[in-house]
Image (cartoon, rainbow, N blue to C red; front, side, top):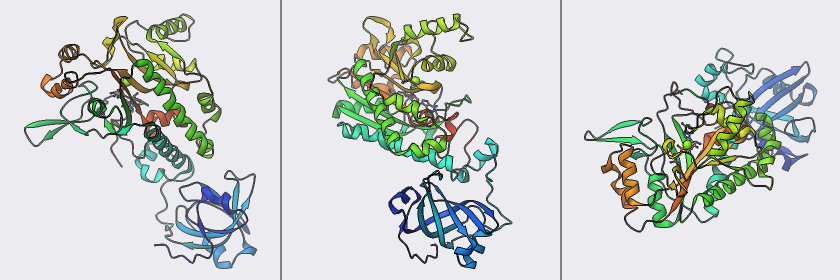
Length: 449
Ligand code: 4AD
Ligand code: MG
């Protein structure tokens, strides 16, 4: 415990606005320190934000001035002072410091390893446990927390039941090439889940509207700025919902998340450097654009002809990252691309009754080139068709017996999607790479710290 002589009520930097003109106490760390002779300007951080203090030598006891003057960065302390509104301050306030109480002073010989000057990404990733304390990284984590809360909240208030699928599974959901395999007591193999979907199709048949929210794993062998090997996915699954209903749901869901972020994180978005006008455009009252795969393909060919894309998209292929970037940059809102060729999509997707070579699926591409944030579909509900799909995809039939049962006992049309939280955070915060979207990213070549 920090030794405290608290003479003023405890508050946080985020709540300074409620204490204007009053004396308060902050439990914080020293983030930065500038001085000009008889004036000190320490910056404090407490996890909710940062605020600058003002310490004139003449206004405080000698010992307070000397303690702060020689205090090392990231030392922990409590600060008592008076809150003063200042329009020039990023937080809108400054603290006239009266007293400080140092918890742990970091010795000069072993300084905090992350200095305020720019450090390389490898160094920062190696010190992720400390890098998290810097204003931009903490702001990202606060926005992430709100995105996660808003995502779950959307389903909670719309009558969905959260049902938690297992993480250890006997079968693959999203293709067999990216499975993390483990030994399950000798005889059996188990895999870390790639998606809760197959299991929540079962809980949806029991409860109607359900969702799952948890970590998912993919042994991605490629180094890209969009792929993690461990990421968080939120997945709704709804009985009697078709593809159109699913697109309506994705639109309402994303609009809710962005609105919540705009409600409470304008300051954080400023620290991160995101243009909020781009997010305001997302929640403005007009529909998200919807394009068929064929329309998106035509758009890409046209862009190629006009010299805007180096390669011509090949009809029938999935979209590459430059293709997705081009498509999404044509719109201010997330764009929903639906009805991809069934051949490039998962085994469980319902074929389009008007063209069986297409799947009743949708990928939602985030604006500004952030790529796919949501993938979903209507599911095959016919027993024989699903069985033949499992065979065609060379999947082990025995492991899918229970999944086939869902088509045997009262099958109904149903749909669902999955959103990767980290992709959503990257888009909303405007981050170049998903490694900054999660406290401790797991990638092909990183599992430390
Ligand atoms: O498109 P995906 O593979 O779809 C599924 O897993 C379905 N079973 C979901 C469903 O219908 N219930 O993945 C869904 C989303 C992607 O749109 C993306 O946002 C994210 O999960 N995602 C990843 N995020 C980070 N790193 C990776 N390696 C990711 N792979 C997918
Ligand atoms: Mg996908």
